[in-house]
Length: 191
Length: 267
Image (cartoon, rainbow over all chains, first blue to last red; front, side, top):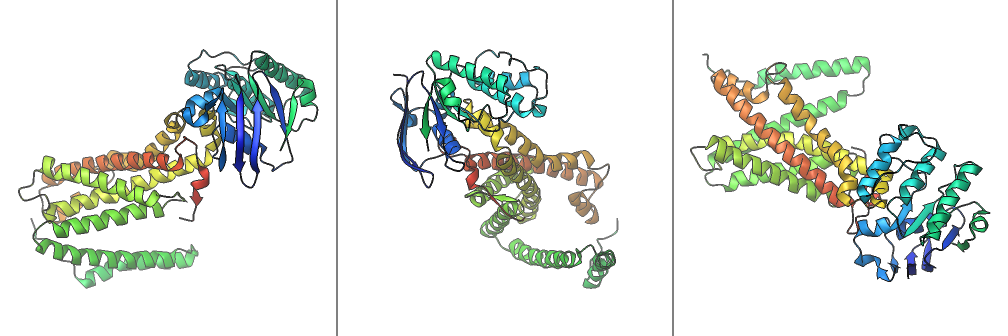
Protein backbone atom coordinates (compact mmCIF):
# COMPACT_ATOMS: atom_id res chain seq x y z
CA UNK A 1 0.00 0.00 0.00
CA UNK A 2 0.98 3.59 -0.56
CA UNK A 3 3.86 2.94 -2.85
CA UNK A 4 5.32 4.11 -6.12
CA UNK A 5 6.32 1.25 -8.37
CA UNK A 6 8.42 1.44 -11.49
CA UNK A 7 8.87 -1.58 -13.74
CA UNK A 8 11.05 -1.94 -16.82
CA UNK A 9 11.30 1.80 -17.37
CA UNK A 10 13.43 2.57 -20.42
CA UNK A 11 14.56 5.80 -21.95
CA UNK A 12 17.46 5.14 -24.27
CA UNK A 13 20.31 5.91 -24.03
CA UNK A 14 20.01 6.93 -20.36
CA UNK A 15 18.43 3.97 -18.61
CA UNK A 16 16.95 0.61 -19.61
CA UNK A 17 14.66 -1.82 -17.78
CA UNK A 18 14.78 0.21 -14.61
CA UNK A 19 12.88 -1.23 -11.63
CA UNK A 20 12.26 0.81 -8.50
CA UNK A 21 9.84 0.62 -5.58
CA UNK A 22 9.26 3.35 -3.02
CA UNK A 23 7.23 2.27 -0.04
CA UNK A 24 4.97 4.54 1.97
CA UNK A 25 7.12 6.76 4.20
CA UNK A 26 10.35 5.72 2.48
CA UNK A 27 13.06 8.15 1.39
CA UNK A 28 15.53 7.20 -1.32
CA UNK A 29 18.44 9.34 -2.46
CA UNK A 30 19.17 9.00 -6.18
CA UNK A 31 22.81 9.34 -7.08
CA UNK A 32 24.81 9.05 -10.25
CA UNK A 33 27.30 10.91 -12.39
CA UNK A 34 26.27 14.07 -14.28
CA UNK A 35 24.45 13.18 -17.48
CA UNK A 36 23.30 9.78 -16.22
CA UNK A 37 19.65 10.81 -16.51
CA UNK A 38 18.72 11.50 -12.87
CA UNK A 39 16.67 14.61 -13.68
CA UNK A 40 15.17 12.85 -16.68
CA UNK A 41 14.05 9.99 -14.42
CA UNK A 42 12.31 12.38 -12.00
CA UNK A 43 10.67 14.17 -14.93
CA UNK A 44 9.54 10.86 -16.40
CA UNK A 45 8.07 9.75 -13.06
CA UNK A 46 6.19 13.07 -12.83
CA UNK A 47 4.92 12.41 -16.36
CA UNK A 48 6.61 15.51 -17.75
CA UNK A 49 8.79 13.52 -20.18
CA UNK A 50 7.86 10.44 -22.20
CA UNK A 51 9.60 7.07 -21.85
CA UNK A 52 10.30 4.41 -24.46
CA UNK A 53 8.83 1.58 -22.38
CA UNK A 54 7.88 0.57 -18.86
CA UNK A 55 5.16 1.02 -16.29
CA UNK A 56 4.70 3.37 -13.38
CA UNK A 57 1.99 2.96 -10.77
CA UNK A 58 0.93 4.52 -7.49
CA UNK A 59 -0.84 2.35 -4.92
CA UNK A 60 -1.22 -0.27 -7.65
CA UNK A 61 -3.00 2.13 -10.01
CA UNK A 62 -1.33 2.54 -13.40
CA UNK A 63 -0.28 6.05 -14.31
CA UNK A 64 -2.09 5.86 -17.66
CA UNK A 65 -5.35 5.28 -15.77
CA UNK A 66 -4.93 8.60 -13.94
CA UNK A 67 -5.52 11.98 -15.62
CA UNK A 68 -2.17 13.87 -15.87
CA UNK A 69 -3.12 16.71 -13.47
CA UNK A 70 -4.25 14.21 -10.80
CA UNK A 71 -1.07 12.18 -11.21
CA UNK A 72 1.16 15.23 -10.85
CA UNK A 73 -0.70 16.46 -7.79
CA UNK A 74 0.03 13.11 -6.15
CA UNK A 75 3.53 12.60 -7.56
CA UNK A 76 4.99 16.06 -7.08
CA UNK A 77 8.16 17.18 -8.83
CA UNK A 78 10.26 20.09 -7.52
CA UNK A 79 12.39 21.25 -10.44
CA UNK A 80 16.11 21.80 -10.46
CA UNK A 81 16.84 25.54 -10.44
CA UNK A 82 13.61 26.30 -8.56
CA UNK A 83 11.87 28.47 -11.16
CA UNK A 84 9.31 31.00 -9.91
CA UNK A 85 6.15 32.46 -11.36
CA UNK A 86 5.94 36.23 -11.97
CA UNK A 87 4.92 38.23 -8.88
CA UNK A 88 5.67 38.13 -5.20
CA UNK A 89 6.43 35.15 -2.96
CA UNK A 90 2.87 35.37 -1.63
CA UNK A 91 1.44 35.38 -5.15
CA UNK A 92 3.58 32.38 -6.09
CA UNK A 93 2.21 30.37 -3.19
CA UNK A 94 -1.34 31.60 -3.84
CA UNK A 95 -1.19 30.56 -7.52
CA UNK A 96 -0.20 27.01 -6.65
CA UNK A 97 -2.63 26.84 -3.69
CA UNK A 98 -5.45 27.89 -6.02
CA UNK A 99 -4.50 25.15 -8.49
CA UNK A 100 -4.53 22.59 -5.70
CA UNK A 101 -7.66 24.04 -4.12
CA UNK A 102 -6.01 24.46 -0.70
CA UNK A 103 -5.38 27.47 1.54
CA UNK A 104 -2.05 29.22 0.98
CA UNK A 105 0.41 29.17 3.89
CA UNK A 106 3.35 31.55 4.44
CA UNK A 107 6.87 30.43 3.51
CA UNK A 108 9.03 30.40 6.67
CA UNK A 109 11.82 33.02 6.68
CA UNK A 110 10.73 34.65 3.41
CA UNK A 111 9.17 38.11 3.03
CA UNK A 112 5.76 37.40 1.43
CA UNK A 113 5.94 40.69 -0.51
CA UNK A 114 9.40 40.02 -1.97
CA UNK A 115 9.58 39.89 -5.77
CA UNK A 116 10.04 36.20 -6.57
CA UNK A 117 12.18 37.00 -9.61
CA UNK A 118 14.75 38.67 -7.31
CA UNK A 119 15.09 35.84 -4.79
CA UNK A 120 18.52 34.32 -4.25
CA UNK A 121 19.05 30.70 -5.30
CA UNK A 122 18.58 29.51 -1.73
CA UNK A 123 15.41 31.57 -1.18
CA UNK A 124 13.94 30.29 -4.44
CA UNK A 125 14.63 26.73 -3.25
CA UNK A 126 12.82 27.37 0.04
CA UNK A 127 9.85 28.64 -1.95
CA UNK A 128 10.02 25.63 -4.30
CA UNK A 129 9.99 23.10 -1.44
CA UNK A 130 7.14 24.94 0.24
CA UNK A 131 5.11 24.87 -2.98
CA UNK A 132 5.89 21.17 -3.52
CA UNK A 133 4.54 20.30 -0.06
CA UNK A 134 1.25 22.16 -0.57
CA UNK A 135 -1.86 20.04 -0.93
CA UNK A 136 -0.42 16.86 0.63
CA UNK A 137 1.19 15.00 -2.28
CA UNK A 138 1.82 11.25 -1.91
CA UNK A 139 5.29 11.25 -3.46
CA UNK A 140 7.93 13.98 -3.62
CA UNK A 141 10.47 14.00 -6.45
CA UNK A 142 13.15 16.46 -5.38
CA UNK A 143 15.78 17.63 -7.85
CA UNK A 144 18.77 19.20 -6.04
CA UNK A 145 16.40 21.28 -3.91
CA UNK A 146 18.96 22.17 -1.26
CA UNK A 147 22.01 22.71 -3.48
CA UNK A 148 21.98 26.50 -2.95
CA UNK A 149 21.06 26.47 0.76
CA UNK A 150 23.51 27.09 3.60
CA UNK A 151 23.88 24.34 6.23
CA UNK A 152 21.19 25.52 8.71
CA UNK A 153 18.66 26.17 5.94
CA UNK A 154 19.44 22.80 4.35
CA UNK A 155 18.86 21.10 7.72
CA UNK A 156 15.48 22.84 7.99
CA UNK A 157 14.57 21.59 4.53
CA UNK A 158 15.69 18.07 5.45
CA UNK A 159 13.54 18.24 8.58
CA UNK A 160 10.53 19.24 6.46
CA UNK A 161 11.10 16.26 4.15
CA UNK A 162 11.55 13.89 7.11
CA UNK A 163 8.26 15.14 8.59
CA UNK A 164 6.58 14.55 5.22
CA UNK A 165 7.90 10.97 5.17
CA UNK A 166 6.82 10.33 8.79
CA UNK A 167 3.26 11.14 7.68
CA UNK A 168 3.48 8.42 5.04
CA UNK A 169 4.86 10.33 2.05
CA UNK A 170 7.50 8.73 -0.19
CA UNK A 171 10.51 10.69 -1.42
CA UNK A 172 12.97 10.25 -4.27
CA UNK A 173 15.67 12.89 -3.86
CA UNK A 174 18.35 13.62 -6.46
CA UNK A 175 21.38 15.06 -4.71
CA UNK A 176 25.16 15.25 -5.03
CA UNK A 177 25.42 15.65 -1.23
CA UNK A 178 27.33 12.50 -0.16
CA UNK A 179 26.08 12.65 3.44
CA UNK A 180 22.37 13.20 2.69
CA UNK A 181 21.24 9.56 2.70
CA UNK A 182 22.96 8.91 6.01
CA UNK A 183 21.50 12.03 7.66
CA UNK A 184 17.99 11.09 6.51
CA UNK A 185 18.35 7.40 7.25
CA UNK A 186 17.51 6.83 3.61
CA UNK A 187 18.65 4.20 1.15
CA UNK A 188 20.73 5.14 -1.85
CA UNK A 189 19.75 4.32 -5.41
CA UNK A 190 22.39 4.60 -8.12
CA UNK A 191 21.92 5.25 -11.80
CA UNK B 1 -15.60 65.08 -60.25
CA UNK B 2 -12.78 64.37 -62.72
CA UNK B 3 -12.43 60.97 -64.34
CA UNK B 4 -9.92 58.43 -62.97
CA UNK B 5 -6.39 58.97 -64.34
CA UNK B 6 -5.14 55.90 -66.19
CA UNK B 7 -1.59 54.90 -65.17
CA UNK B 8 0.72 54.12 -68.08
CA UNK B 9 3.93 52.08 -67.90
CA UNK B 10 5.83 55.39 -68.07
CA UNK B 11 3.95 56.58 -64.98
CA UNK B 12 4.90 53.39 -63.14
CA UNK B 13 8.50 53.87 -64.26
CA UNK B 14 8.44 57.33 -62.68
CA UNK B 15 7.06 55.80 -59.47
CA UNK B 16 9.85 53.21 -59.54
CA UNK B 17 12.35 56.09 -59.39
CA UNK B 18 11.38 56.43 -55.72
CA UNK B 19 12.56 52.88 -55.06
CA UNK B 20 15.73 53.51 -57.06
CA UNK B 21 16.38 56.64 -54.99
CA UNK B 22 16.09 54.47 -51.89
CA UNK B 23 18.58 52.01 -53.34
CA UNK B 24 21.05 54.85 -54.02
CA UNK B 25 20.71 56.13 -50.44
CA UNK B 26 21.26 52.55 -49.29
CA UNK B 27 24.46 52.31 -51.33
CA UNK B 28 25.78 55.60 -49.96
CA UNK B 29 25.00 54.67 -46.34
CA UNK B 30 26.05 51.02 -46.88
CA UNK B 31 22.93 49.67 -45.19
CA UNK B 32 23.20 46.43 -47.15
CA UNK B 33 19.49 46.44 -47.99
CA UNK B 34 19.71 47.66 -51.60
CA UNK B 35 19.63 44.23 -53.23
CA UNK B 36 16.72 43.09 -51.05
CA UNK B 37 14.85 46.33 -51.71
CA UNK B 38 15.16 45.96 -55.48
CA UNK B 39 14.25 42.28 -55.37
CA UNK B 40 11.19 43.09 -53.23
CA UNK B 41 10.15 45.82 -55.67
CA UNK B 42 10.52 43.47 -58.66
CA UNK B 43 8.64 40.73 -56.79
CA UNK B 44 5.80 43.15 -55.96
CA UNK B 45 5.60 44.27 -59.60
CA UNK B 46 5.48 40.70 -60.91
CA UNK B 47 2.93 39.59 -58.30
CA UNK B 48 0.61 42.54 -58.94
CA UNK B 49 0.88 42.10 -62.72
CA UNK B 50 -0.05 38.44 -62.27
CA UNK B 51 -2.90 39.35 -59.92
CA UNK B 52 -4.24 41.86 -62.45
CA UNK B 53 -4.08 39.25 -65.18
CA UNK B 54 -5.66 36.47 -63.09
CA UNK B 55 -8.42 38.75 -61.78
CA UNK B 56 -9.14 39.81 -65.37
CA UNK B 57 -9.76 36.14 -66.20
CA UNK B 58 -11.79 35.56 -63.03
CA UNK B 59 -13.99 38.58 -63.65
CA UNK B 60 -14.83 37.24 -67.12
CA UNK B 61 -15.67 33.74 -65.88
CA UNK B 62 -19.16 32.77 -64.78
CA UNK B 63 -19.78 30.35 -61.90
CA UNK B 64 -18.01 29.96 -58.56
CA UNK B 65 -15.12 27.70 -59.73
CA UNK B 66 -12.63 30.42 -60.66
CA UNK B 67 -13.30 32.55 -57.55
CA UNK B 68 -13.05 29.49 -55.31
CA UNK B 69 -9.78 28.41 -56.91
CA UNK B 70 -8.20 31.87 -56.62
CA UNK B 71 -9.30 32.33 -53.02
CA UNK B 72 -8.14 28.84 -52.05
CA UNK B 73 -4.72 29.51 -53.56
CA UNK B 74 -4.54 32.92 -51.81
CA UNK B 75 -5.49 31.45 -48.42
CA UNK B 76 -3.07 28.54 -48.77
CA UNK B 77 -0.17 30.78 -49.74
CA UNK B 78 -1.04 33.13 -46.85
CA UNK B 79 -1.12 30.20 -44.40
CA UNK B 80 2.29 28.97 -45.53
CA UNK B 81 3.76 32.49 -45.50
CA UNK B 82 2.49 33.05 -41.93
CA UNK B 83 4.66 30.15 -40.75
CA UNK B 84 7.65 31.05 -42.92
CA UNK B 85 7.85 34.49 -41.30
CA UNK B 86 8.27 32.99 -37.83
CA UNK B 87 11.45 31.95 -36.05
CA UNK B 88 10.21 28.53 -34.91
CA UNK B 89 8.50 25.50 -36.44
CA UNK B 90 6.76 22.48 -35.01
CA UNK B 91 5.48 19.41 -36.91
CA UNK B 92 1.98 20.04 -38.27
CA UNK B 93 2.27 23.82 -38.11
CA UNK B 94 1.87 24.43 -41.86
CA UNK B 95 -1.38 22.44 -42.01
CA UNK B 96 -2.64 24.21 -38.87
CA UNK B 97 -1.81 27.65 -40.22
CA UNK B 98 -3.42 27.01 -43.61
CA UNK B 99 -6.50 25.52 -41.92
CA UNK B 100 -6.89 28.45 -39.55
CA UNK B 101 -6.34 30.91 -42.41
CA UNK B 102 -9.00 29.22 -44.55
CA UNK B 103 -11.60 28.98 -41.80
CA UNK B 104 -11.12 32.48 -40.35
CA UNK B 105 -10.96 34.36 -43.65
CA UNK B 106 -13.77 32.43 -45.34
CA UNK B 107 -16.05 32.75 -42.30
CA UNK B 108 -15.55 36.50 -42.05
CA UNK B 109 -15.74 37.09 -45.81
CA UNK B 110 -18.94 35.03 -46.13
CA UNK B 111 -20.54 36.98 -43.28
CA UNK B 112 -19.46 40.26 -44.89
CA UNK B 113 -20.76 39.33 -48.32
CA UNK B 114 -23.99 37.62 -47.40
CA UNK B 115 -25.11 39.41 -44.22
CA UNK B 116 -23.55 42.87 -44.17
CA UNK B 117 -23.32 43.76 -47.85
CA UNK B 118 -26.13 41.45 -48.93
CA UNK B 119 -24.73 41.75 -52.46
CA UNK B 120 -27.20 41.75 -55.32
CA UNK B 121 -25.46 38.92 -57.24
CA UNK B 122 -24.36 35.44 -56.12
CA UNK B 123 -21.86 35.09 -53.22
CA UNK B 124 -19.00 34.49 -55.62
CA UNK B 125 -19.42 37.81 -57.46
CA UNK B 126 -15.67 38.50 -58.02
CA UNK B 127 -15.98 42.29 -57.72
CA UNK B 128 -16.89 41.86 -54.02
CA UNK B 129 -15.57 38.44 -53.02
CA UNK B 130 -11.96 38.74 -54.19
CA UNK B 131 -11.04 42.17 -52.77
CA UNK B 132 -12.82 41.51 -49.46
CA UNK B 133 -11.11 38.15 -48.99
CA UNK B 134 -7.81 39.66 -50.08
CA UNK B 135 -8.01 42.42 -47.47
CA UNK B 136 -9.01 39.99 -44.71
CA UNK B 137 -6.29 37.52 -45.71
CA UNK B 138 -3.52 40.10 -45.86
CA UNK B 139 -4.24 41.24 -42.33
CA UNK B 140 -5.01 37.79 -40.92
CA UNK B 141 -1.60 36.79 -42.26
CA UNK B 142 0.03 39.37 -39.98
CA UNK B 143 -2.02 38.41 -36.93
CA UNK B 144 -1.54 34.68 -37.45
CA UNK B 145 2.17 35.06 -38.08
CA UNK B 146 2.75 37.25 -35.00
CA UNK B 147 0.50 35.17 -32.74
CA UNK B 148 2.02 31.86 -33.85
CA UNK B 149 5.57 33.09 -33.42
CA UNK B 150 4.82 34.52 -29.96
CA UNK B 151 3.15 31.26 -28.87
CA UNK B 152 6.00 29.00 -30.03
CA UNK B 153 8.60 31.40 -28.60
CA UNK B 154 6.71 31.45 -25.29
CA UNK B 155 6.53 27.66 -25.01
CA UNK B 156 10.18 27.34 -26.01
CA UNK B 157 11.55 29.98 -23.64
CA UNK B 158 9.11 29.77 -20.74
CA UNK B 159 9.25 26.01 -20.45
CA UNK B 160 10.30 26.05 -16.78
CA UNK B 161 7.26 28.12 -15.73
CA UNK B 162 4.84 26.05 -17.79
CA UNK B 163 6.24 22.87 -16.28
CA UNK B 164 6.17 24.38 -12.79
CA UNK B 165 2.40 24.76 -13.16
CA UNK B 166 2.00 21.33 -14.78
CA UNK B 167 4.05 19.72 -12.00
CA UNK B 168 1.64 21.16 -9.43
CA UNK B 169 -1.46 19.74 -11.09
CA UNK B 170 -2.35 22.40 -13.65
CA UNK B 171 -4.20 21.28 -16.75
CA UNK B 172 -2.59 21.93 -20.12
CA UNK B 173 -4.80 24.98 -20.63
CA UNK B 174 -4.09 26.39 -17.15
CA UNK B 175 -0.34 26.01 -17.65
CA UNK B 176 -0.39 27.48 -21.16
CA UNK B 177 -2.84 30.33 -20.45
CA UNK B 178 -0.29 33.12 -19.78
CA UNK B 179 1.55 32.30 -23.03
CA UNK B 180 -1.66 31.99 -25.03
CA UNK B 181 -2.91 35.35 -23.77
CA UNK B 182 0.39 37.06 -24.54
CA UNK B 183 0.51 35.55 -28.03
CA UNK B 184 -3.08 36.51 -28.84
CA UNK B 185 -2.39 40.08 -27.71
CA UNK B 186 0.74 40.25 -29.86
CA UNK B 187 -1.23 39.11 -32.92
CA UNK B 188 -4.04 41.61 -32.35
CA UNK B 189 -1.93 44.70 -31.66
CA UNK B 190 -1.40 45.78 -35.32
CA UNK B 191 -5.12 45.81 -36.12
CA UNK B 192 -5.92 47.59 -32.82
CA UNK B 193 -3.32 50.22 -33.71
CA UNK B 194 -4.72 50.50 -37.22
CA UNK B 195 -8.25 51.09 -35.88
CA UNK B 196 -6.97 53.81 -33.57
CA UNK B 197 -4.93 55.55 -36.29
CA UNK B 198 -7.45 55.27 -39.12
CA UNK B 199 -8.74 58.56 -40.42
CA UNK B 200 -6.54 60.60 -38.09
CA UNK B 201 -3.03 59.55 -38.99
CA UNK B 202 -3.66 57.48 -42.11
CA UNK B 203 -6.07 57.33 -45.04
CA UNK B 204 -6.44 53.59 -45.47
CA UNK B 205 -5.87 51.69 -48.71
CA UNK B 206 -9.40 50.76 -49.61
CA UNK B 207 -10.76 54.25 -48.98
CA UNK B 208 -7.91 55.68 -51.05
CA UNK B 209 -8.82 53.32 -53.87
CA UNK B 210 -12.49 54.24 -53.78
CA UNK B 211 -11.76 57.97 -53.66
CA UNK B 212 -9.39 57.62 -56.63
CA UNK B 213 -12.11 55.70 -58.47
CA UNK B 214 -14.47 58.63 -57.91
CA UNK B 215 -16.64 57.29 -55.05
CA UNK B 216 -18.47 59.64 -52.72
CA UNK B 217 -16.27 60.18 -49.58
CA UNK B 218 -19.14 59.18 -47.24
CA UNK B 219 -19.63 55.88 -49.07
CA UNK B 220 -15.86 55.32 -49.11
CA UNK B 221 -15.68 55.92 -45.35
CA UNK B 222 -18.57 53.50 -44.67
CA UNK B 223 -16.94 50.81 -46.82
CA UNK B 224 -13.64 51.38 -45.05
CA UNK B 225 -15.27 50.96 -41.66
CA UNK B 226 -16.98 47.78 -42.81
CA UNK B 227 -13.64 46.47 -44.10
CA UNK B 228 -11.87 47.39 -40.86
CA UNK B 229 -14.46 45.51 -38.80
CA UNK B 230 -14.22 42.52 -41.14
CA UNK B 231 -10.43 42.60 -40.89
CA UNK B 232 -10.57 42.86 -37.09
CA UNK B 233 -12.91 39.86 -37.00
CA UNK B 234 -10.66 37.87 -39.32
CA UNK B 235 -7.52 38.76 -37.38
CA UNK B 236 -9.11 37.88 -34.04
CA UNK B 237 -10.45 34.54 -35.30
CA UNK B 238 -7.20 33.70 -37.05
CA UNK B 239 -4.92 34.72 -34.19
CA UNK B 240 -6.90 32.92 -31.51
CA UNK B 241 -7.26 29.89 -33.77
CA UNK B 242 -3.57 29.60 -34.54
CA UNK B 243 -2.51 30.20 -30.93
CA UNK B 244 -4.80 27.36 -29.79
CA UNK B 245 -3.47 25.19 -32.62
CA UNK B 246 0.10 25.88 -31.47
CA UNK B 247 -0.89 24.76 -27.97
CA UNK B 248 -2.22 21.46 -29.37
CA UNK B 249 0.95 20.90 -31.36
CA UNK B 250 3.43 21.41 -28.51
CA UNK B 251 1.60 19.27 -25.93
CA UNK B 252 1.23 15.51 -26.26
CA UNK B 253 -1.62 13.23 -25.23
CA UNK B 254 -0.46 13.20 -21.56
CA UNK B 255 -0.31 17.02 -21.45
CA UNK B 256 3.48 17.00 -21.54
CA UNK B 257 5.10 20.11 -23.00
CA UNK B 258 7.20 18.74 -25.86
CA UNK B 259 9.73 21.47 -26.54
CA UNK B 260 11.76 18.82 -28.37
CA UNK B 261 9.24 19.25 -31.20
CA UNK B 262 10.07 22.96 -31.60
CA UNK B 263 12.77 23.72 -34.15
CA UNK B 264 14.38 27.13 -34.50
CA UNK B 265 14.84 28.50 -38.02
CA UNK B 266 16.09 31.72 -39.59
CA UNK B 267 12.97 33.63 -40.64
